[in-house]
Image 1 (cartoon, one colour):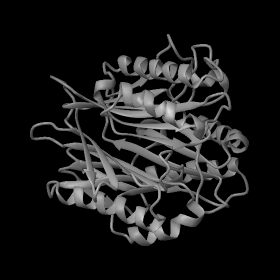
Image 2 (cartoon, helix red, strand yellow; image 1 turned 180 degrees about the vertical axis):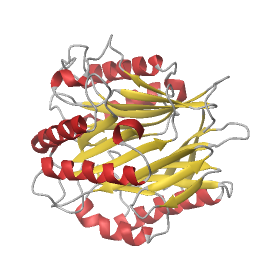
Image 3 (cartoon, helix red, strand yellow; image 1 turned 90 degrees about the vertical axis):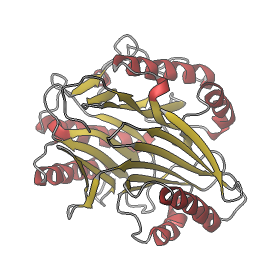
Amino acid sequence: MNYKSIETLKKSTQIRLAVFEVAQGVSEYQVIVEGLEPSLSYAQQVENVFASFENWLLDQSQEASLIFLRCFLSDAVNQNDLLQARLNDEFTCALSVVQQAPLNGTKIALWAYVQTKVQVRLLPTGLLSVKHGVYEHLWSGTAANHASNSEYQTRILLNEYIMQLAERGCTLAQDCMRTWFFVHDVDHHYDGVVKARNEVFKTQGLTPETHYIASTGIGGSSSDPRVLVQMDTYAVKGLKEGQVQFLYAKSHLNSTYEYGVSFERGVCINYGDRRHIFISGTASIDNKGEIVCPGDIYEQTHRMWENVETLLWEAKASFDQVGVMIVYLRDPADFQRVQQLYEERFPAIPRLILLASICRPGWLIEMECIAFVRNVDSLFPVL
């Protein structure tokens, strides 16, 4: 993994990059764009982060395509209109917008996933189709509805997604690799998400005896107050038996169904030239499902890292191969300490630290990440 950091626009923004390149193959970029001047107006910050990102993208090969873009806002109700006007259908990508305030004091930050040599098309169903070789990657962002509570909203989201997948000849159980659920007031509405997900998954053949889907369920709000749950998704069509490995780290973590939820701790997807490893939202928990070091942000951070590292090891990977980290803090007062810890251990890896309530109140911190590992002599088709 090649890491780069670029200060742009008179040092008002910073771009952190992780670049994964394979000779004659698809190159992949994880891109984090942050503002560095909280005193600027929201309009100035929006223009700065997007201009910086657009300038960087223009400097890349003409083969580079934006696949997925998530915009993190500090006050979505008041900020989304200007954001949408700035986007103005400029990007053909899966777009995700969520209120999770960047904890460096700015009002907006971006996470982008860019690939080269792929064919990108927005489907009529709203999914983004990304094709290369024998695979079709299907992304979506900011799916939402106005049902009466979080359980019904989640049920509708999942059932509509199942139909979207069916139109591409895919199923939830076979082809969906990753989901994100952003839950408004997660302390009160997460139970509805869990109930709906458990029940829908059962109808699709997803059980403790089969497998679930790597996922993050975290606090996050929409600009629309009627939306209690937003969902982003990622699926892959064309995978064969043996290409998908679910990650458990049973020495450190328990199975999620033991405390009533249904997601996998992580997933590793094997291609002929690389492995993609998606680590779900992971916190300071032990293999009995208990919170480790309640109330101690320092110790919880280290136990969380240990859990993530164990999941990566299970996929024959390490932190050295991580392309991006998204970190969630329940209490903004913990930001400076956590920022210092990450700077000391992972100074180069692109990351964002965001304000987001975690689904269990005793968890002070949670993180997810994506890793990219070269494969040698794999029999599977290349990405």
